[in-house]
Image 1: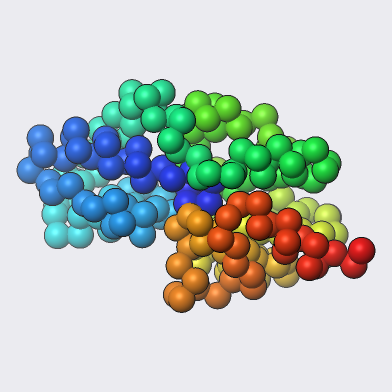
Image 2: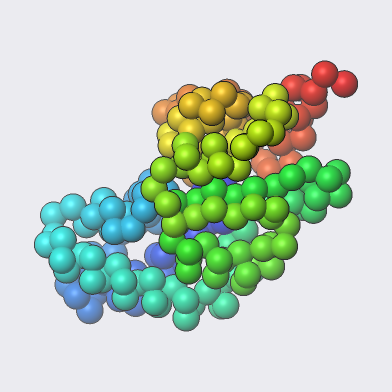
Length: 203
């Protein structure tokens, strides 16, 4: 979700701007937040603040997450990457099963899904677990792997796809950096996914 459907770094940056200075922590750049996104908490915050006491960083992270809940309704219209809503609508219209696997915690994931109004598009939602390979295996569970695609933005996404024998697609409109990743395909706008589907389809 984060970095593929939602530019949630915007939300985290706003919360950090409100919380971090009160605890004498610097506010990271939005690029630093985007690079750290995808790591489960509290590792996410340890990456942002590697030189600070971990107990402090962990406690600040909890405050940031609470602040995000307050800010979320104000930013919901800005969080989805342009074209993601139309993509989900078209996938659903074509009776394509849509699943979500996120290492983000349950509160974070479900808050964004509900606030942005996209929760109803997903047939399966798995989150709050560190092992994306296992989540993806659970989602596939008996499905024809030739008909499965993983869209993501981080190494753990293409590693999980590879471990499960399915095609991986890097979301370059989001947090995926083509030059430092090894996805099978890359898309530069959400609706480009249909070009990949057409390329892979025997029809």
